[in-house]
Amino acid sequence: HYYHAGEDERILLQRLHPEAILIKESGLSGGFNEKVEAALQEGIRIFAIRRPPMPGSFMIVNGEHGLRRMIEKHLPDFYPLRSGLTTGTCAAAAAVAATWDIFNVQRQPRPEEFPVILPNGETIYVPVEEQELYPHPSCVNDDWRLEADATVIKDAGDDPDVTNGMQIKANVAVPFRFDDPTPAELGADDYTVIVCGGEGVGIVTLSGLGLEVGGPAINVTPRKMIENNVKACLQRLGISKQPNPFAVTISVPGGEEIARRTFNPRLGIEGGISIIGTSGIVKPFSSEAFIDSIRKSMEVGRATGSPRIVLNSGAKSEKYVRGYYPELPVQAFIHYGNFIGDTIKIAADLEIKAVTLGIMIGKAVKLAEGNLDTHSKQVTMNKDFLREVALSTGCGGETLVVIEKITLARELWTLLSAEDLQAFCSRLLELCHQYCDPLLPEGELTILLISEEGKIIT
Image: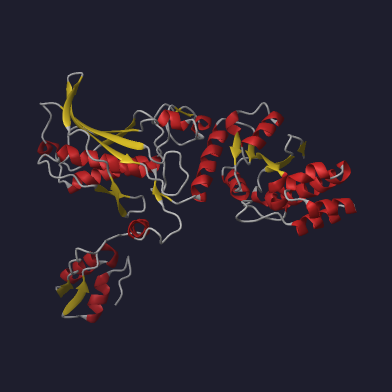
């Protein structure tokens, strides 16, 4: 009989009246505890088959991310690209190592890797740098504390991450006074963990990110990861509740300089990088991460109160479109890269009513054919489609000859006659609206076609 979560096991036992039940040590997912409790209540003997001990040569994982990392470690050529760790995972690992250091009173050899519980509940092991300093007491304003530091080197795998190779540091401090109550006097087993930002971690200066303005740019998921992993470490070590909170300060040496190469200044994050990550794992060249950054950028743009959000493929198109909307704040201009469809859907999710899509002709001809992701790996310029557009607008034979000869769509700006160019571009815009307007059903979408020199056709 298979176990089904939520069912009352006693009903089956009362119907069958067995002398005994035979169950295997299957853990929580198999309902082991529920089966045992039901059998005990019915006075039925229990025979449990124990899980055999794993051979020392076995490498144990308990989730998809850990499995991939183990394969990448021992079979480095198995995947074409290597996964990495988010800054949040690195910060959590450093905090766990520093916590372990504080309570390693017997000076046992420090592990090279420490366990980190990811948001999905699985555990992976993260390498931590060798100790620089052993835990030490310090005094601040007559208050004593015991503290330790640990460092993890950010490994982004094969993802082009500007933070790759940087030091992610954690300082864990336990304040105490000599008249503090003992754990027994506290009467509970619990911990309070406070996460702070230090050197190289940015400060939030604008609303819209879901973080407190004036606080450190440590996103909700990694903050929770740090808290939960420190608590889990304390539980593993058998540490009772402390009278004072554990203060975890995350720092990134050089973070202020590297942040200038990110979108952080535009998002209102000043003085350093963000500690981010939703899954704890960086997928190589992750489109998911890029789309998540688009959403964050748009949330900030909306929070400024801007009457319009303007979507651009990159810095070049933004320069021209900002001249078209000089009154809008800088946060209103969002880069979509190639993810046009996903970006417009995000605008719809956020209930943004007025959206402008700035697009250059190379992406426009792909979009007009119905390709909402315009990356060259996904789709290339289709000359048959260009000929169809030209014929449908009554363009002359000269335009068809031009289309046959061009290598890049942007050549159409200079090779078509003014009359044919206007007709051709107008039809492109109609087709782009045909595919994009349904993605923003409650809003108004304006599409601007931009030339290499900044000419705009609406």
